[in-house]
Length: 200
Image (cartoon, rainbow, N blue to C red; front, side):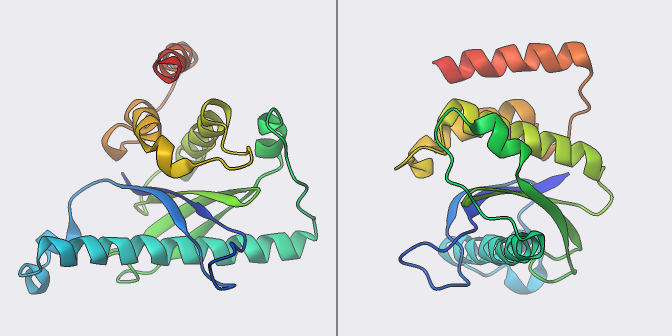
Protein backbone atom coordinates (compact mmCIF):
# COMPACT_ATOMS: atom_id res chain seq x y z
CA UNK A 1 0.00 0.00 0.00
CA UNK A 2 1.17 3.50 -0.79
CA UNK A 3 1.58 5.66 2.33
CA UNK A 4 1.81 9.05 0.64
CA UNK A 5 1.96 10.89 -2.67
CA UNK A 6 3.80 14.22 -2.87
CA UNK A 7 4.44 16.96 -5.36
CA UNK A 8 7.28 19.20 -4.23
CA UNK A 9 10.12 21.35 -5.48
CA UNK A 10 13.50 19.80 -6.24
CA UNK A 11 15.30 22.95 -7.39
CA UNK A 12 16.07 26.05 -5.34
CA UNK A 13 13.14 28.39 -4.87
CA UNK A 14 13.80 32.05 -4.03
CA UNK A 15 12.34 32.07 -0.50
CA UNK A 16 13.93 28.76 0.58
CA UNK A 17 17.46 27.94 1.66
CA UNK A 18 19.59 25.81 -0.67
CA UNK A 19 18.74 22.42 0.89
CA UNK A 20 15.03 22.98 1.44
CA UNK A 21 12.10 21.70 -0.56
CA UNK A 22 8.60 23.19 -0.64
CA UNK A 23 5.76 20.66 -0.52
CA UNK A 24 3.13 21.80 -3.00
CA UNK A 25 0.71 18.90 -2.57
CA UNK A 26 0.56 15.90 -0.25
CA UNK A 27 -1.89 13.10 0.28
CA UNK A 28 -1.49 10.52 3.03
CA UNK A 29 -3.08 7.07 2.86
CA UNK A 30 -3.58 4.38 5.47
CA UNK A 31 -3.94 4.58 9.22
CA UNK A 32 -2.77 7.59 11.18
CA UNK A 33 0.42 6.44 12.93
CA UNK A 34 0.03 9.10 15.62
CA UNK A 35 -3.33 7.69 16.70
CA UNK A 36 -1.93 4.15 16.76
CA UNK A 37 1.15 4.87 18.88
CA UNK A 38 0.48 4.74 22.62
CA UNK A 39 2.92 7.48 23.63
CA UNK A 40 1.43 10.03 21.19
CA UNK A 41 -2.30 9.45 21.74
CA UNK A 42 -2.67 12.57 23.85
CA UNK A 43 -1.59 14.86 21.00
CA UNK A 44 -4.09 17.51 19.97
CA UNK A 45 -5.33 17.47 16.34
CA UNK A 46 -3.08 20.44 15.58
CA UNK A 47 -0.03 18.62 16.97
CA UNK A 48 -0.92 15.54 14.88
CA UNK A 49 -1.22 17.69 11.76
CA UNK A 50 2.18 19.28 12.44
CA UNK A 51 3.76 15.85 13.00
CA UNK A 52 2.37 14.58 9.68
CA UNK A 53 3.56 17.75 7.95
CA UNK A 54 7.06 17.19 9.33
CA UNK A 55 7.08 13.57 8.09
CA UNK A 56 6.11 14.73 4.62
CA UNK A 57 8.81 17.42 4.73
CA UNK A 58 11.45 14.83 5.67
CA UNK A 59 10.48 12.70 2.66
CA UNK A 60 10.57 15.75 0.36
CA UNK A 61 14.04 16.76 1.62
CA UNK A 62 15.41 13.24 1.11
CA UNK A 63 14.04 13.09 -2.42
CA UNK A 64 15.37 16.57 -3.21
CA UNK A 65 18.81 15.43 -2.08
CA UNK A 66 18.57 12.25 -4.21
CA UNK A 67 17.46 14.25 -7.28
CA UNK A 68 20.35 16.70 -6.82
CA UNK A 69 22.87 13.85 -6.55
CA UNK A 70 21.41 12.12 -9.61
CA UNK A 71 21.54 15.29 -11.68
CA UNK A 72 25.10 16.09 -10.61
CA UNK A 73 26.23 12.55 -11.40
CA UNK A 74 24.64 12.57 -14.86
CA UNK A 75 26.05 15.99 -15.72
CA UNK A 76 22.95 16.93 -17.72
CA UNK A 77 21.80 20.53 -17.68
CA UNK A 78 18.12 21.34 -17.21
CA UNK A 79 16.59 22.98 -20.25
CA UNK A 80 13.49 25.07 -19.67
CA UNK A 81 10.45 23.31 -21.06
CA UNK A 82 7.49 25.01 -22.62
CA UNK A 83 3.88 23.85 -22.40
CA UNK A 84 3.38 21.14 -24.98
CA UNK A 85 6.70 19.41 -24.23
CA UNK A 86 5.21 17.32 -21.40
CA UNK A 87 5.83 13.93 -23.05
CA UNK A 88 9.46 14.77 -23.84
CA UNK A 89 10.11 16.17 -20.37
CA UNK A 90 8.59 13.09 -18.71
CA UNK A 91 10.70 10.80 -20.89
CA UNK A 92 13.87 12.64 -19.81
CA UNK A 93 12.86 12.81 -16.13
CA UNK A 94 15.31 11.66 -13.49
CA UNK A 95 14.02 8.78 -11.41
CA UNK A 96 15.09 6.67 -8.49
CA UNK A 97 14.30 4.91 -5.24
CA UNK A 98 15.25 5.90 -1.72
CA UNK A 99 14.94 3.52 1.23
CA UNK A 100 13.80 5.08 4.52
CA UNK A 101 14.70 3.26 7.73
CA UNK A 102 12.05 2.41 10.30
CA UNK A 103 11.40 5.40 12.56
CA UNK A 104 12.79 7.92 10.08
CA UNK A 105 10.15 9.39 9.56
CA UNK A 106 7.58 6.55 9.41
CA UNK A 107 7.23 3.88 12.08
CA UNK A 108 8.22 1.17 9.59
CA UNK A 109 10.66 0.95 6.69
CA UNK A 110 9.50 2.57 3.43
CA UNK A 111 10.56 2.56 -0.22
CA UNK A 112 10.25 6.00 -1.80
CA UNK A 113 9.99 6.21 -5.59
CA UNK A 114 10.55 9.60 -7.19
CA UNK A 115 10.51 11.34 -10.55
CA UNK A 116 12.32 14.65 -10.97
CA UNK A 117 10.56 16.56 -13.76
CA UNK A 118 12.19 19.96 -14.28
CA UNK A 119 11.85 21.73 -10.92
CA UNK A 120 9.10 19.42 -9.61
CA UNK A 121 9.40 16.15 -7.76
CA UNK A 122 6.64 13.53 -7.85
CA UNK A 123 7.00 11.03 -5.04
CA UNK A 124 5.32 7.85 -3.81
CA UNK A 125 6.20 6.36 -0.42
CA UNK A 126 5.39 2.64 -0.47
CA UNK A 127 5.58 -0.18 2.04
CA UNK A 128 8.66 -2.38 1.55
CA UNK A 129 6.71 -5.41 0.29
CA UNK A 130 4.97 -3.44 -2.50
CA UNK A 131 5.66 -4.17 -6.15
CA UNK A 132 8.07 -1.35 -7.08
CA UNK A 133 7.70 -1.86 -10.84
CA UNK A 134 3.95 -1.45 -10.54
CA UNK A 135 4.42 1.56 -8.25
CA UNK A 136 6.80 3.17 -10.76
CA UNK A 137 4.30 2.62 -13.58
CA UNK A 138 1.54 4.25 -11.52
CA UNK A 139 3.83 7.14 -10.53
CA UNK A 140 4.70 7.78 -14.19
CA UNK A 141 1.01 7.57 -15.11
CA UNK A 142 0.05 10.03 -12.35
CA UNK A 143 2.86 12.38 -13.35
CA UNK A 144 1.86 12.23 -17.02
CA UNK A 145 -1.74 13.08 -16.19
CA UNK A 146 -0.68 15.93 -13.89
CA UNK A 147 1.59 17.41 -16.56
CA UNK A 148 -0.84 16.92 -19.46
CA UNK A 149 -4.13 17.86 -17.82
CA UNK A 150 -3.03 20.38 -15.20
CA UNK A 151 -0.31 22.12 -17.24
CA UNK A 152 2.23 22.16 -14.42
CA UNK A 153 5.18 23.12 -16.61
CA UNK A 154 3.75 26.48 -17.57
CA UNK A 155 4.97 29.76 -16.12
CA UNK A 156 3.12 30.63 -12.92
CA UNK A 157 1.48 27.21 -12.66
CA UNK A 158 -0.24 27.05 -9.27
CA UNK A 159 -0.27 23.44 -8.08
CA UNK A 160 -1.94 24.54 -4.86
CA UNK A 161 -5.01 25.75 -6.77
CA UNK A 162 -5.32 22.43 -8.58
CA UNK A 163 -5.42 20.16 -5.54
CA UNK A 164 -9.03 19.07 -6.07
CA UNK A 165 -8.17 17.91 -9.58
CA UNK A 166 -5.14 16.03 -8.27
CA UNK A 167 -7.46 14.38 -5.71
CA UNK A 168 -9.67 13.20 -8.59
CA UNK A 169 -6.65 11.71 -10.36
CA UNK A 170 -5.57 9.91 -7.20
CA UNK A 171 -9.04 8.52 -6.56
CA UNK A 172 -9.02 6.97 -10.05
CA UNK A 173 -5.40 5.82 -10.39
CA UNK A 174 -4.49 5.12 -6.75
CA UNK A 175 -7.76 4.45 -4.88
CA UNK A 176 -7.20 4.56 -1.10
CA UNK A 177 -3.47 4.11 -1.71
CA UNK A 178 -3.88 0.70 -3.37
CA UNK A 179 -1.63 -0.16 -6.31
CA UNK A 180 -3.79 -1.45 -9.19
CA UNK A 181 -2.68 -4.01 -11.75
CA UNK A 182 -3.93 -2.67 -15.07
CA UNK A 183 -4.54 -4.80 -18.13
CA UNK A 184 -4.74 -3.05 -21.49
CA UNK A 185 -8.55 -2.84 -21.64
CA UNK A 186 -8.91 -1.61 -18.06
CA UNK A 187 -6.13 0.95 -18.62
CA UNK A 188 -7.97 2.32 -21.67
CA UNK A 189 -11.26 2.65 -19.79
CA UNK A 190 -9.43 4.32 -16.91
CA UNK A 191 -7.80 6.77 -19.36
CA UNK A 192 -11.22 7.71 -20.74
CA UNK A 193 -12.64 8.13 -17.23
CA UNK A 194 -9.74 10.35 -16.18
CA UNK A 195 -9.96 12.41 -19.36
CA UNK A 196 -13.71 12.99 -18.87
CA UNK A 197 -13.25 13.94 -15.19
CA UNK A 198 -10.42 16.36 -16.06
CA UNK A 199 -12.54 17.98 -18.77
CA UNK A 200 -15.16 19.04 -16.19
